[in-house]
Image (tube, rainbow, N blue to C red; front, side, top):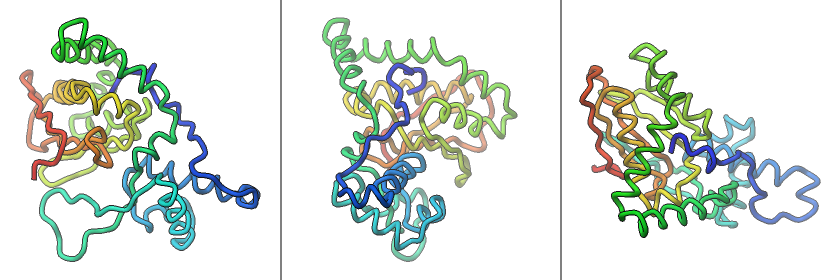
Length: 252
């Protein structure tokens, strides 16, 4: 969630899986980490997409994916389709497992969960957690607001994505039917958000207010999806009465 800089992933990946000494000598582990990092940064990916991004052959990518799958770092799944499904079999993509995400430094997750549980138990239950989540964003959202307000209306989703990426969310904005999709390929506090969905809800409300339109959450990492996806309607105009749908999954 924006602003939780003390909980941010520092971008340093621990070595995933175990490799014999001869693999270390040939750089196998380093390349394997690059594959895992690419999936973290870009979300669930096909073999072809990974090969293109990393400058590797598809055969090499498959070999590393086999090793990462054996170590329970990645898993194969069908690519989630939003909207009308085209003919043919859905593309096979590889996504990080919970174990794979834990391979990246998220040591503050337990601290976040403990702190939020304390707030819920001592300060008024789930409503207190929701109030905390909103207050945190309101107090620390200056950089996001400045980035969005400096951009023309048609580039605001892109500006927000860049600001989120600067805070470790590996975000992108892309065109979608009748709107845009804001995709956050990484959530440094996914485990906390899984236990306390108020964090995701407050973030969605903030996006709606910031962009001046209602937005809809189609998927979240905290709910087990490969990427946090927020739909932004194309036809809406800036208003002072934006609303947000906080659904954690594609309702279709």
